[in-house]
Length: 252
Image (cartoon, rainbow, N blue to C red):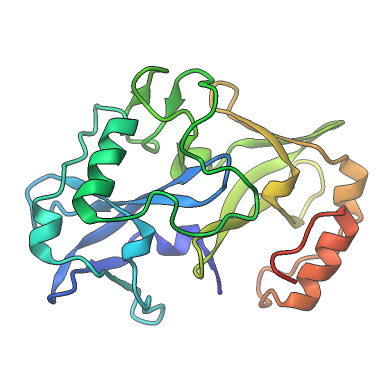
């Protein structure tokens, strides 16, 4: 099932032994694999003024009607997990400690976009925490591929021959927590239209320029199958979209 990231923010998060622990504050993703790597959960109403990172593999049977994400983790596990300082980067060391503590597999899940998202050349500091901050990560401190979806929302989308709009939202697949599509608002170029762009088309994400660069042209975007934000996305539509752009399918 495809879920809009904006809808997930604010969901209540519940421990396996009962009771709410907080709410989803942000989601961190890997810009190589386009997998969600962490949920940033604000537990300030339970543990004073604190945020924690929760791995998506800990989510079980989301309740979309009640807007609740139940976890496999207990309250004690969450309480004793490493805290997330708002003025510090999410470093590779911090992630390793969290994987060890929670028993999560860093290679959990399958990505259609390749890579394991845990290494690669360092490409400069990256903003990791959304608009109200989890910090800037220097090359030797943070994972250069870890990004905040709250921060990337609003980035300008650049086709090979010009801008097409901005990233308004993201659709994630709750089967493996990949970012499946970027929802692009094209109002300044193609008034009244929204289009879906797969991470297959992304060449680079620049936090300095606040832009996402694509390998497709504007006319290809303009002639893509129309997307109705109200309608459910089915496999028929996805096949048409991927055939139009020449993208591989997501298991179809």
